[in-house]
Structures are given as structure tokens and as C-alpha cells.
Image (cartoon, rainbow, N blue to C red; front, side):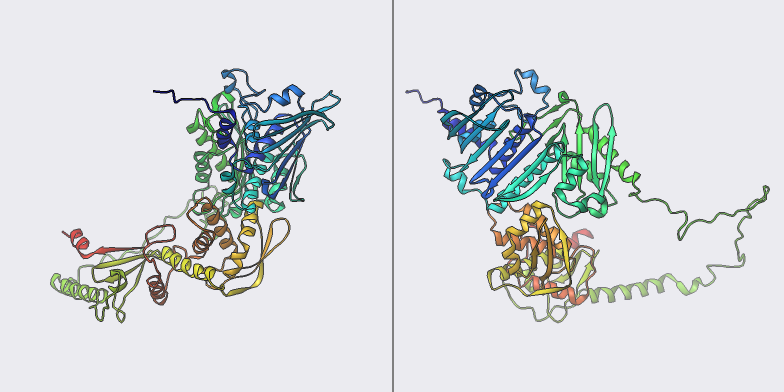
Amino acid sequence: MADIIKLLPDSVANQIAAGEVIQRPASVVKELTENGVDAGSTIIDVIVKDAGKTLIQVTDNGSGMSAPDARLAFERHATSKITSANDLFSINTKGFRGEALASIAAVAMVEMKTREEGADVGTSIKISGSKIESQDHCSCGLGTTLSVKNLFYNIPARRKFLKSDTTEFRHIVNEFQKISLAHPEIKFTLEHNGTEIYNLVPGNHRQRIVGLFGKQINQGLISVETETNLISINGFIGKPESARKTYGEQFFFVNNRFMRHPYFHKAVTEAYQNILPADVIPSYFIYLTANPASIDINIHPTKTEIKFENEREIWQILMASVRESLGRFNIVPSIDFEGEGAVNFPISGKSDFLPEAPRIAIDPTYDPFANKSTYTRDSYIDRFEKENISYWERLFPERKNESAAESEIKTTVAEPERKFMQIKNRYISCPVKSGLLLIDQRRGHERVLYENFMECLNSNGSASQTTLFPVTIELGQDDFLVLKEIKNDLKRIGFDIEYGDDSVITVNGYPSISGSTNIKEVIEILIEEFKSTSNDPSTGVKEKLAAAMASASAIPYGKPLSNIEMETLFDSLFSCSLPNYTPKGKAIVSIITVDELDKRFQ
């Protein structure tokens, strides 16, 4: 049999490796900007065109490179950060694998100009698809400028699956925020299609947070600071009143490196327990400092998933630190000794004063059994049985005039004598032929709204209800970009929104079919729902928007409903094409059969 195993060409191997590191334009921005940080830069400028598809240019004033180093930097696993395996346990730099430039050069047209301190001229290198086209001397400033053009030009399938410019630029903004938050001592600028998005001057962490997310966030920040032998924690958490229903202002850093850590996120949210509702997310910017030997940052190609040696202990320290900060700023509930209901203690100037014991009035002649003949056992049971029978007759009236239809749920309740009852302000119950029908009121309303919004998106649109006073909302840059991406569809379903500068929107009208009048909350939930479904390839933009709007506008749990409201929701739900499930596939209705009820009493 002929040999069939062969080595892949370097160009193909580099493209495969690039798929792990370079997933989208934002990945290029991350890698090049982090290289600038590692080079000791004090200024890093990022210029992007067409959300990075046409151009990504990162310029820094760092140490620069010599001509041999500049050429070697594009080879795979060429790095100045580590020399042995032991160095992996003491990493303090952003990059160390030597994969970034090789991966980028494999899938784009790259030009690098660099000059190190003391050199009269710099070096210019041009590479396309891992192939070196030229290397010459050039005139350039101290540091490095890397220009990446036509990303994925040689992999049409990858380029085809990039999202819209708005979506891709939103990911770039997100990566830019992470790096600039980790290094407030560096000046960062971000420009997109000739428009300056950020111009961040050097400062402290609080100033950098304000520079990225606006002045309004400053008054909602609470400082966190804890020093232990195991971990050092500092940064800021948000006041409960500034918490939102959307993600976007939750950042963890360890040794100035951004990380994702759901376990530690749980520690922060646990600290807010009994202060915030379950569906509200506090903001936080938390910086951890740990011994590099106690963490492993080499477990993921993007180095954002980090393993800690003492995760449980750090979890406890983190939660206690956040709680202590909330308590220090009087956020946690306290006992009111002066308000209504306070206990008044007797005060006397006499040193021999003793409080008088309370007096209790007692009637020793009272006999609670004096009239027991009135409540004989037989008469009591007779009265109880009559009331009980009457109650169950009202609860299960005789069914009449039931018509045939495609599903039992739609046909088991008689029109003239339907009885609805709300359970715990969460479920709607109704007797049916086979037992007891239960409806999740929020999910049911979500299904009704979803189909209404889809009808609006597929037709000429929905009526808009004008607000009495325009509602101004200041958003994060990434949330602002989400709304701009879907602004035409938002207008079609009834939103009248003005998009201003500095990520500020003004809502002048909202859909008349919306079940909520809290416009700010609807916008926040809409953004979060749309972001959470943006990675689902099976869902189109209209379906995502309709599902997000339905979730944002549906009646909440805990809201009491009148009989007319329950009946209207019931009729609307069972006129839907799919009344049994929400747009996300969660069950809406359930039937407890008579057989199940009988078994409970056996």
C-alpha cells in the first residue's frame, strides 16, 4: 500500500492555525494592539475601515524592531516572550505563543513598518498569504505600524460568513474596551471610516472607565479594594440603581489581562443577592493581581479563559469584598432606630428607676365551651359538605357547545362558561374536558407578541404610540451599535428613535402593541435579547428582533390580571399558529389530566 501521510504545506498549515487565532476583524485588532502594549508603548492608535474588512491599522510608539527581528516575527512560534517551558508559569505579557503575526499574514495582505531606538532608518515588510513580497529600508517613526488589508481575501468562505459592518465593528469596540481598560496609563485612539470613536488620555482606572462609558457612570461606581496573601482585588462595582438588564459593563482582569470567568461572575452577583432582582445585572470593573505561577493562561487560543489554582478560596474572597464595599457605602439594608415602628425605651433621670411590669386584663369567668352545643359535629360536617359541593360545582361547570378543532387545547373549554383563575400571579388555570389547563402568563403573552411583531415586520409596519415626554437614554458604544444595526426594523414595528452623538438615543414613540410602558427597560431587554441570539445562524434578523421585542414587552411575572385580561390572553394565545411554545421553544401550556388528579388522592 502506498504511503498516504504527508506534511501540509506551510501556507495551508498557517491558514488552519489562523482559524484558531483570527476569527474576525476584532481578533486582528486585539492581537496587534496587545503587541503594542507589550512593546512598552505610551500611545496606540487604531484605524479601521469597513469594520476591518478593508483595513486595520495599528500604530504604536513602542520599542520597534530591527530588520532581522521584523522578518522573523512573521514565522510561526517566533516570540521574544518565552525561551523555555518554565517561562509559561511566569507570564506577564499579553502574547507569548508567536502565532499572531504568522496567522494574520496567512489570511490577509500585511505591511509592517518598524524602527527601533537608535536606528537611522526603519524596515518595511510586505506579506500576502504567508508569502513575503518585499523587505526594504524605509523612513518611519520610532515604534511599529502594522496595516492589515483585505482580511480573508484568500479564503472566500471565511469572508462570506463575516457579519454586517455594524456587528463586526461592535466586536472591535468590545476588544478595544478590554485592552484600554487594562492599561489606563496608555493613550488609545480608535477611528472608524474617518470618524474618531474614542480618544482616551492617560489616567487612572476610574478616569478610563468614564472615558469609555460616559460621565454618567462615574456617580454610580463604588470602589473595591482587598489585599490578601492569595489575591489582591481592586476596582469598582456599580450601585444597585445603575444595574441594567443587559450585559456590557462586566469586566474581569487578572494581572492586567482581560478574562472571562463565569464562576467569579457568580460570586459578584451573589453579593448583590436580596438587593437586585434575579434578571438585573450589576456592572463591575474588577482587577485581580495574582502570582503568575498560580494561574494558567495557556488553556485557550485567545487566552481569555484562565484557570486559577485556588478558585474556591478566591470566590469567597471576591464575594466578601464586594459585599463589604456595598455595606461600606450603605447599600445593604440597615435597621432604622428613628423611623416609624421604632422601639421607644423609657428614660428617667432617677438612678433607682425600674420599669413597671405590663398589666394583663383577665376574665376568670369566661368559658369558651359554654355554647358548644351550637357547633355539634354533625351540624359542622353538614355545613362543610354543602359549602364544599357548592364550591366544586362552581369550579367545574358542565361543558356545553364544544366544537371540534385541530388540537384538544383549543377546544376543551366551553365558550359561555369558561372560568379562569390566576395562581401566584404567574399561571392562569382553566378547567378543560380532560383535566386542568395551566398557562404560563408571561410566556403566553410572549408568543402572542412575537407573532404580532412578525406580522408587522412582514407587512407595512405597526402603529407607533407617541411618548408624552421624549425619553433620553445613554448607552454603551456596543449597545448603541446594536440599535443602529436594526434601526430600520425598529421603525417598522413602531419605534421612533433619534440617534445622537456620544451613544445617546431619544425615544419619541414606541410600538402601540407593546405590553410595557417602561421604555428604558424595554430598550435594555431588547438589546440583550438581540445580542444573545446574534450567534444563532438558524434565526434571521426579523425573527431575532421579533423574539427580542416580545421578550422585552411581555407582561412580567407577579402582575395580577383581571378576568377579562386572562380571557383576552387565552383567546389571543390559541389564535396563534404555535400556541404551545415560545419563540425559544419553552413550554407555554400544560394539562394536568383527571387521571393524574385521581392518582394524587389514592
